[in-house]
Length: 220
Ligand code: DC
Image (cartoon, rainbow, N blue to C red; front, side, top):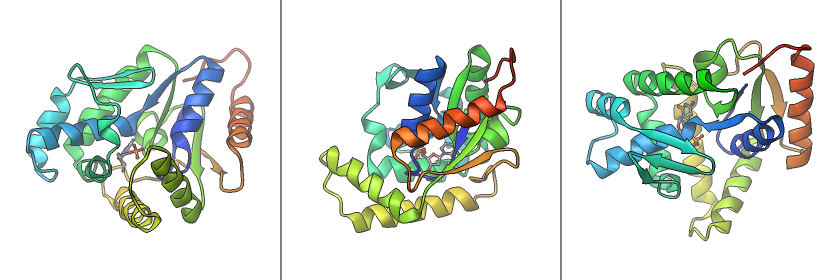
């Protein structure tokens, strides 16, 4: 099952909840691009050095344990959420070699077990044959408000204006890059969560799942 959409639409929270409800494995593909960006930062590799970024993405051992993310054996769960890494992840994600490496890892994960995978290109590129595809969206101002609230809860000192500027820049880059830009797959269900609570959005997603899955058919 694929959930795509822009930053702050609620993909992570909802994909996690829906995976728990269905007994599927939740996979956060954004965390993988973030891990590659973090490693580059640690190794002083420039985010636009395509060759070294591709090598590093191939070599990266990324483990998505429930609730924790490990890079080459080290827990990087919190480190990959900094504003610097958020921006870096969006920059390294434009490099075709980086995307190839990540897509190969993602497909391998999806082949092992039933997954709810969230990102930007899951329904279009990674699993174009996924049985259920959802494009989760929300009004840009609402997405900024949600991210700002999250940052404040984590105790980060960042203004709402900075959150808005960073999100706008990232959305722009993610949706205009030439390789696998953020896009709704033609067969994806569009869901706007602007006016919905988390519970309501979860119910709406499960309704789509029920409507798309026929009796006795496995889906991923
Ligand atoms: O979902 P996120 O904000 O954690 O993702 C971080 C960045 O990674 C995002 O700005 C774009 C990139 N990304 C991508 O290009 N393809 C994906 N499937 C997931 C994320």
